[in-house]
Image 1 (cartoon, helix red, strand yellow):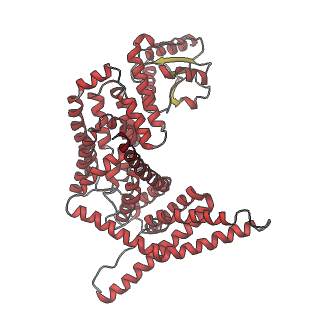
Image 2 (cartoon, rainbow, N blue to C red):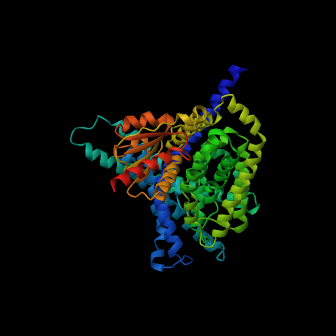
Length: 529
């Protein structure tokens, strides 16, 4: 039985890794161009006829940006990922062929429609985001393959001529390919996907998408759905008469994640409880959703809480008919509010609050029900939180500075719990302290919160001229006079900045060592006056 299960597991892992890589590639094409999508969203928010400040002249930018600029930018980025600048240029040429082919097909259809049914509404443009994501890798990989055919076979002095003409001719051929079969294929695919989404909306089943989306997020399988389907369809809807789309909120809603982290903040135990407040800030305001994935993986049943929270958020947006103008990336509450359609703030904010509340309540019940068992496991030395962080990194397929910071914080809490308050050490020195740095692996999260706590303490003590910042240990540059780290990171920090005063703490969020630091800087500044 054991030997039979190994191939099955490997097969599943292979499928999962394949979906992750596909999603990562799509994300790599979309994410660098989010600033362009934000710029387009600002144009639509202010200058179209239903915008905040309508300006007919500037509103003429909206159509060309979404129809030409954005798909070509996506294609250019995708081509560059595969084959550098050469792949980018050929991908852009080929994608323009897809755009023109789609427009031609729609014009032909509308011409026939006008003859057969003059009262029927003509079809509008289909924006070729999916076309760009299909053509970019095809163009770049094929160009790369062609170049290998004559690599080393071109006579000296003719390389530039061959390179320029081969790319130009192949770009021309791909543009023709895109104009006919690819444009026809993508138009049909967009119609099918749009009909599927409209069907879910019409029968009030859109909230059920959370059953797929929330678990997919935890296992890093959401990018293929989000960037491959939801973003293109959402942009298509946002470019239409409604100027918004609910699809942008299916995956980006920060409510379920912050609800789970708040439940751990109040009802969790050990390292997970200590790490949850800082993670909640990063997730809700910073928009980095992956920080809550280890908390869900600690108890996979908690994914049910995320699903119910997600469904609540989607249901709220369906009831209020709310949506965003453009993708909210990263999935921060700030990005969500910034992209909210001008009449939809109440519905969108309520969807975040209610989804967080439902996830919090369900997760709290689950955590309370298993509390005795969890405390017993912790007493026996089980480190489920660190294991969940490692599993999250394995699911992602690469290391993460955010998850590394979460692991460092968890390790610091565990070390503090086992060693007790007496293990913290403060290195004293006559060195003047004008610059204090909180250092951790990632330089964010709990170290930022700790810096804020100490900054407020120094301010209340009436001390001026002392800066308190947070950094990653790798970014320490020798300018710090005093460095505060968690116990297990102090030696690394000391190796980077040997001349600084080093303070070791158990927990960045609350340490008696902060009062000692305040007393030190206050006495120095009083002596200097």
